[in-house]
Length: 288
Image 1 (cartoon, helix red, strand yellow):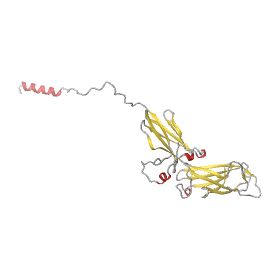
Image 2 (image 1 turned 135 degrees about the vertical axis):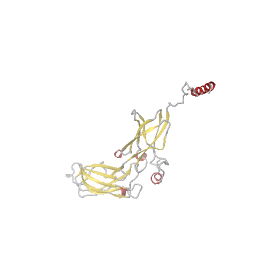
Image 3 (image 1 turned 45 degrees about the vertical axis):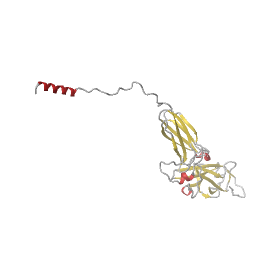
Image 4 (image 1 turned 30 degrees about the horizontal axis):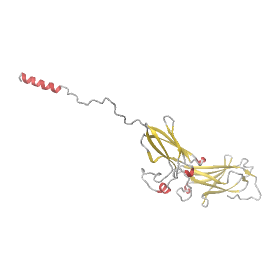
């Protein structure tokens, strides 16, 4: 190969090995214009407090108190009372639905609504207690959830479930006097779900699946367990018992009514205290 060919080859090789110039576009020196990314965004959250296996806690039972708290700071972001009705019984209790379909909000029902101005994702604790009209049956539940600015929680919202029953002793009355020794007295009580629905045979809340009984106590000792039967006329449960003598119950007696459904996890009870008075002659049956 002559010298000219050698030089030509060296020139080509040199050109191949030379780095190519970079044609990348220069980065913008200025930050993008303000897109309001850091402005507070109104974020609506719905909370529904419901009775386990039943309806929504509405005005009939005093509703439920809901509190939303910022977990990081402990600041209360919103609090108030769930307002409205218990919901449509047919829709809630009897209508089949897919998992993603609304359960409680397909028809109007009680709900707590809050609109928060959020700048960043916020972990909150949402707590509820109720039913507020029945302090002896009041339960409390809470959960944690992330709230994302601008993303509303609607439809059913956050559903908080309370377990238990509202049990009320309707007779004998614990106010205005005691019980007469040796009297044959009727113990009567009503049982409802925490949303206020009556528990009775053959209904959506079937009392045949619930253990409902009474107890007569002297001090802390159970003296007698009373089997209670449903009374259709008054939509309540009844059992007769005899009042003990004053010498056996110097500090009076306590009546307790228990409603227990282990299969659902719902339990409730009511207690009332009564002084025992000396017997009277002739003995007279106490009427409801």
